[in-house]
Each structure stands twice: as C-alpha cells, then as structure tokens.
Length: 211
Image 1 (cartoon, rainbow, N blue to C red):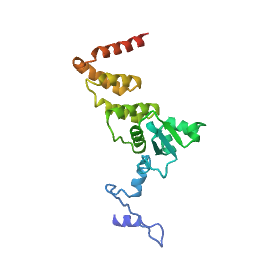
Image 2: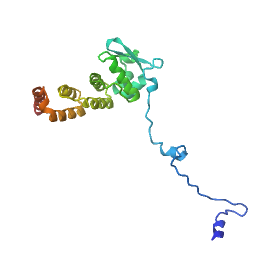
Image 3: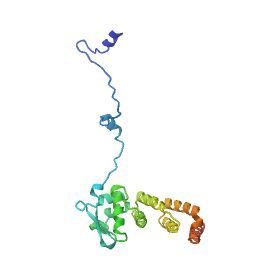
Image 4: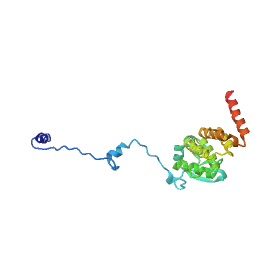
C-alpha cells in the first residue's frame, strides 16, 4: 500500500514530484488573497468628511439666507443630487458662476444639508431645522435625507404639533411622516385641541380625491 502511494509521486525516471494539499482556515486570516477576492463585489461607501466645509479645495459657494456663504464641491453635490447635477452640467447661470443661491434656506440648515451629503449623518435634530431640512431635501431630490427627516419629525409628534405635521407631510409627499401622524391622531383624538380643523382637512382631502 505504501509502495503504491510512493509510485504515484514519480512522473519520470530521474525526477520526483511531490504533490501535497495544504488547507488554511480563513477565520482570522483577513489578509489572505482568497479572502480579499471574495469581497471584490462589495462597493466601498465613499465618505467626504475630510473635505466637509473645506475652503481650500472647494470650487463653488452656496449662498444662504442672510448672504452667508458655505464652501462646497461641485462633483460631490452632483453625485448626491440630480438637481445639482443638472445645474452643473447644463448651460445654466450656476454652471458659469462660482456660487449657487440657496437664499430661501437658513445657514444652519444648509450646513446640515451638506453634512448629510458629505458624511451621511445629521447632527442637529431640532424640529424647526428638521422641517426646513425636509423641504430642502425635497427640492434637491435627496430621498434618503428626506426619509431621515421624516423619521426625526415622527419621533417628535405631540398633540400640539400633529396638525402642522399633517400639513407638512401632505405638502411634501412625506408618506412615512403622514402615516405616523395619522396613527398618532387616531390614538390621541380626544386630547387634540385642533380636532375640528384636522377633521375638516382630512374630509377636504377625501372630497378632492373623490372628484
């Protein structure tokens, strides 16, 4: 038996080829070539935090309410927003100049708007800012930011602001916020001071749909 195994290793008269099989567990071996190849289908998520609000590398300024300007980068904005992409790609005033007017949006809101684009995070969850951030994300077609704002606002629902949230969700087609607000109203209907206005609003929407 042993002799037969030895004979298998001979491929010619004057030489010997030794064939062996080596098994190496992948667990804990993250630097192995095979491990890296196994992950080649994963697309890395780019993070631009290192150039967030960076003046030296910016190629465009966003002019906010009150005239304050914030440095930004065309390629980052265009990658995040179809509106910015169209703005910088076509023969538009913003493409020719070094600034973009966002004078209907507060400085603080534009900073959070850019923070999300560059880092994927929102730092300021204040209600008024979140509402303005939601409207801005709708205007510039940032769906993920809009969804994030809806979740923030949904977490702040109260008997005092439910009517306002219902109006906002209807105006900006914020479906998640609308569902959460309607559910909140159903469970707190007796404690709402604006119950008649809410009822009339809902009935008005129902009539417009039925026409």
